[in-house]
Amino acid sequence: MVRHDKVRGELEAVAEYRTDEQGTDVARRESESRTFEERIRLKTRGDVYHPDFLNYDVAVGVGLTQQHLEYDDVSSSESDTLNDYSVSAQLLRTKPLSGTFDAGKSQDLIARQFLGSLRAERENLAASAFLRSERVPMTFQYSSSETAQDGFTDVARDFFRRDDERFRYSASTAFSETSHARFDFDRTESRQESVGAIVDTETDTYRLAHDYQFGEADEHRLDSFFNYVDQTGSFDFESLRWQERLRLQHSPSLATKYNFQLIDLERDTLRSEEVRGQAGIEHRLYESLVTTADAFVSETDLDAQGSLSQHGGVLAFNYRKENPWGMLFANYTTNLTQSEQSGGGGTGVIVNETHIATELEPVQLNRTGIDVLSIRVKDTDGSFFSEGDDYTVTESNGRIWLTISTLGAIPPNFTEGQTFFVDYTFFVEPEREEETFRQNFTIRERFGNDVSLYYAYRRQDQDVRSTLTDLTPDEYTTNTVGADYARKGLFLLAEYSKEDSTQLPSTSRRLEGRYAWPIGTATSASVRVSNQWLEFEEPDKRNVTLFKSGAEIFTRLSGAYSVAAGLDYRDEDDTRFGTTRGFQLDTKLRYQFRQLDVTLGTELNFLSRRDDEIESVFVYLQARRFF
Image (cartoon, rainbow, N blue to C red; front, side, top):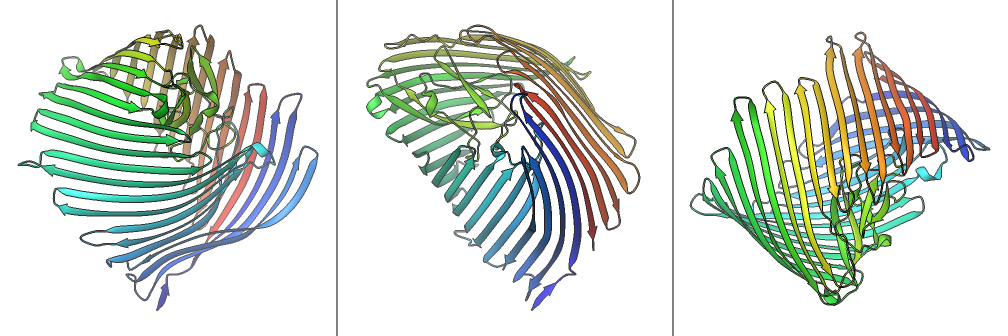
């Protein structure tokens, strides 16, 4: 009845030594830790009665850890048990009604650039049931996860914990070959704890979608969406969105698009309801030119705060043409938006305003008159970033800017180029008229010798009239020129950009190079270096110079030995925030022979950040024996 494969196992021994120093010359903390771990893991797979009835994979680990820690004037020694496990099972996997079960626990190290590693413990549980019906297939899912992170020392600011519990139900059906519908319900309960902050949220999300294709060759398509979100807890809001999208393909080269959208949003005592309509055309001239044009109109009811009317349009040309020198790419987009706000006063609300994180250039929030205390910055999974650790808030000419840092000490932390959301409330003016005209033009010639030259032009003209505030229009003109070279493993780039702006004029110069190459059959290496100079002018004068470099190498010395090493160096000079300078070195020597795996590793971090010195040395030896 119960069958299992041969039980396989693993014996592991880990020895770790770590020293940390952090602080200024006046207030400095030091710590030293020694850790020894022993554990055994057993794993197998099998089935009950029949592989199609119940099959499973099981892994269990038990062990012991001993730690000695000295920090400041405190010394402590302790021992504890270790356990990790992984269980997964499939029930009736080939039947109309089937299910899966997964559970696991793990302890890992999370590397942080220049700040040393975090110790993380994760525990998760998930169960799913699938109803494979020809008419209405359904899925029921439940999952819970607990994540805890802290440093190797008893430094409170490294603490982070997040607990999530989620239930999801989804069903879909096909009314015909050209008509499909899907419904999803998602309930999530989350709790996030970090230094000085606890955030609890309960979120219910309902989604309903339908698509319908019609026409002689099913060339036309209508998509319908309904989404409702109800969040309670530390931050309450309700959001309802209904959207209809229609695309008519009149010929292979001509299509028209129509869009209707209703958004109802309520946060605390604030409410807004927006109705938006949009129509557009798309035309393709051979393979070279694609022309799109869109026009929209929207009406927003701000409840006691009055109303907002907007209308405008977008015209875009995308051109691509092969020529005797290579390939030419060009794009031109023009956008006109006119808005008029009238009535009441008070405050409005913005939820999930989307931005891209970048280290050097501040991120500007879309609205004016923002209540700074209401700003909440969060990751796409709902985790909240910390002001002062991950970002700082500045105000200039009635606008709000976020300066992003990728070197936060408290998780979660930003990474360069990631998407994030911002929630906030803003002051609503009784009378306001605004007209914004934008132009964007880019041209690039990629030559046959792998050299590319490009030029970009961006311009925004704005006319703002308000009865209460005298705001400086957000107008700018940006010219960017650059060249790059890409061939095999080599990439080089040089770029110059100057922005004349009524808000934050700046000049940027950037050099970048990367090269990756194989050294023989058993060795590969890569190097990278970049330098950027950024100068902000009045009213927020600030200069930043950022130099980053790195190198990595991997080589297999023999059939059993291999070496990997990586080095990162950062040198940042910011006239407002001071200097950030330091390097991170990570090396691994690994021996693998038959059923023995031994790794000797070191990690060195030395960072001077805004008068805060951070130094850490981490050495570990890990030995595994498989059987």
